[in-house]
Length: 228
Ligand SMILES: [Zn+2]
Image (cartoon, helix red, strand yellow):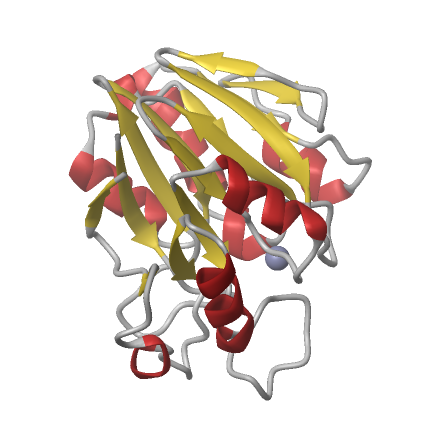
């Protein structure tokens, strides 16, 4: 099973990076998790878009969804449709993003199970300023992606269930907001066996040095492929 980081920044990218987006491959099947700004071109560089059939959205913040808008032009041109899995919301942004014939939208919550080729997906509610669901992908191994969240019991569930957790835990200790800090990342890595890939970096703070040499944890690198 493979994970490629398309973009790792939030809430906006640095000068050369992209906002949140990830490509997962298992036995020749692929899926995408989130499509923040800049991720479409990277996805195009790595795949034939006609092979992209499943897109999972952790939550509706712009840094996780904005490239879905230009993506629609490409889908129209290719006459290709994709399945979008996202928690339904009664908001103007939800309607703007998803009211398009080339998006086949399916609502998700904690009771949903999705089959995407050789992968099976479930979801766990996180705690964030928008309805965020962690995405649990079971293929040859198990990979979880927290989306955006503060520390909560379901983060521990992700760690117990998974071989690798792609986690929103890259903010500096001084950060006060709806994300986990590098200190919390260290604590989680110490207590639980799963490998953690720390993501959702601020453009102004690189946690690499703080987390360097720490067991079970690595900082996400864009366009790098991780073997799960
Ligand atoms: Zn967010």
